[in-house]
Amino acid sequence: MPFGGALARAVGAWETAQGFGDSPKEKSTWDAEYGDGRWNYIGQLHENSRYWAIIGYMDAFRRDGEYLDVGCGDGVLFRRFRALGYQRYVGIDISDVAIEKLAPHQDDRTIFAQADGNVHEPEGRFDVVVFNESLYYLRDPIRSLERYAQSLKPGGCIIVSTYTASRRSRAVLREAKRAFEVVDEAQTTQGLNSWLCTVFKKTKTAVATLLVGAAADVGDLLALTT
Image 1: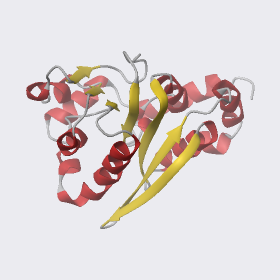
Image 2 (image 1 turned 180 degrees about the vertical axis):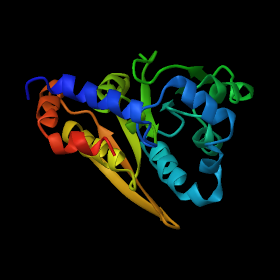
Image 3 (image 1 turned 90 degrees about the vertical axis):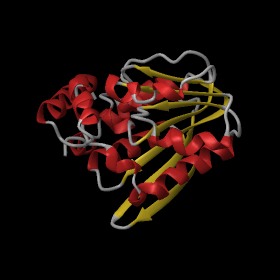
Image 4 (image 1 turned 180 degrees about the horizontal axis):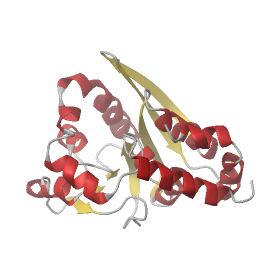
């Protein structure tokens, strides 16, 4: 669709300005939320099942491999996963406050760094790239997904966890399924909450072409706004 990219950027800017709970946020907002404990609840028992779905896929696709955790926060996924072992674990997050909490866990195999997931260019190659409830916070999720896919080793995969109550999250997942091959998917439900854990592999289809088609779906673009 002509001007599809401009429309997507305009929608993203509007979302940020409106401050919806599942839309992109400024770094200062993330720092404030991690500083006041806003995200402490995600490490509690009532969200435990979704982490084990992610970890199960991480381990199944490459045991003792190299992992990139995009939007790692203060390390809830890492602390559950580390007992399985790894060659290299890299976590990035836009929040300095979140990353500072992970300083005690850093060593020659474990790196946590402040970085903006919207523009970050990973160093090296990874067996698995994980977006644990983080992809839909990026301003251009599908282009970002393709950029991170370039950092996969041959046979590597991308794991995306999606909170099903978020309309934006569901819309982003639909677009990801158009752009990438779905290898497997599992749904977990705990209490009143439900999540989809989707495993993707990169396809040879030009993502730029897919994005043109995706931009034409105005309904999905509008769905990202609520």
